[in-house]
Structure formats: C-alpha cells, structure tokens
Length: 235
Picture 1 (cartoon, rainbow, N blue to C red):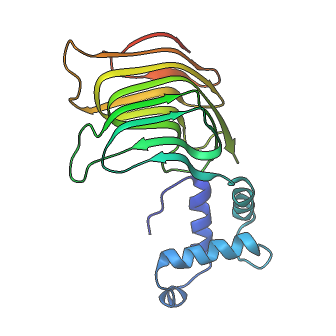
Picture 2 (cartoon, rainbow, N blue to C red):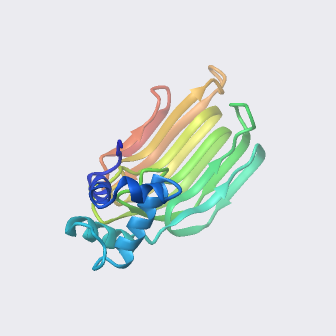
C-alpha cells in the first residue's frame, strides 16, 4: 500500500497497518472503509484503540481544530453573463468566495462580467487540508473587477501545513482584469496568483493590472504573468 499526505497522516495509516490483518480487511467493503472505521474509533475512543500516542494526539487536534465549513459563497454552472458579489462577510471557511463555471465539454469564457467588491473573508484552514483552499477564486471570465476586498487566514494544528493563496484567478481570461485594493493578513503564501490557460484577450486591446495588494504576513504579493501591469504590491 502506498500512502501519500502529511507525515502525521502517514503515521496514522502505519498504525492502522500494524493493527489489522488480511482476514479483518476481507470483512470490510474496502480498505478505505476499514481505515475510516479505525480513525473514527481512534478519535472517539482513544483509550480503547490500538493507536500510537502521537497519532492519537494528532487525531484529537484535528477533531478539535477542524471546525471549518468547506465553502462560503459559490457560483457554479455552465455560463453567467453577470456575477456580482459585494458587501459580504464570510467567516470560518476553507474556500471563501468561489466563482468557477465551465460549459460541459468546453474550455472558454463562460462568465461575461464578474464584479467582486467590498467583501471580507476569514479563512480557517486545517494544516492537513490538501484540496482547494483560497479566500477568492475566479475562473474563465471575460471581464473581472475585484476591488477593496479583505482576507484573513488562520491555520489550525500547525503553521507548517499545506500552503494557502489568498486570490486565485485561473483559466481563459478576457480583455479586462482589475485587482485593486487587497488587504491580507495571516500566513498566506501568495497574495494573488493568476494562471492563464488559453487565449482570451485581444492583443493590444487588453488591460490587465493589479495595484494596492498587501500580503502583510505572507511571503509574496503576486505570482502573475509578465504582461500584467502592477503597482504598489507588497512584499
């Protein structure tokens, strides 16, 4: 069995492997169900479970600290001419505001205009969380305006967990991309990450810029394509 994930998760699975047998596994629907049953028993009745002290402490901390909702505000589907999200407070989420649309079987501009303004997102992201995690996400958009937004990040269990970016803009992007006024606190790895995966904007007819981005406690303010203009982005 090959195990991925953090060292703590691999240790739990190793403890499971030491305390099971092929006969016991054969009685379960799958090895995944067997592991889930073992973890649940270890977390709820550690005094009766055959699990190491370090793994028991890890599971107890995970149960105590991982009190986050998966997503705050989500816009999905196949297309939307206008998405406007403003003046919201999202607290205790792993994904704060997520605008991710995609037409079935196609990659292209499925959001006409997205306006995300004046929002505050408070993230609580468990250190072992490996799936999507971000304060703001927008994908496949013809016109994007993000102004005067805030985000805070709290990690649970450890500050050395999976990295979290504050803003992720991904996919096919159109002629207009504006990200201005992003106030970030907490251990965000990068303030704004932009990845363009296909042609969307018109050469010489596109305006894409970022300004006033402060990743106060993070390492880097921006990770964006070279043709994006930017000003007053720290650090």
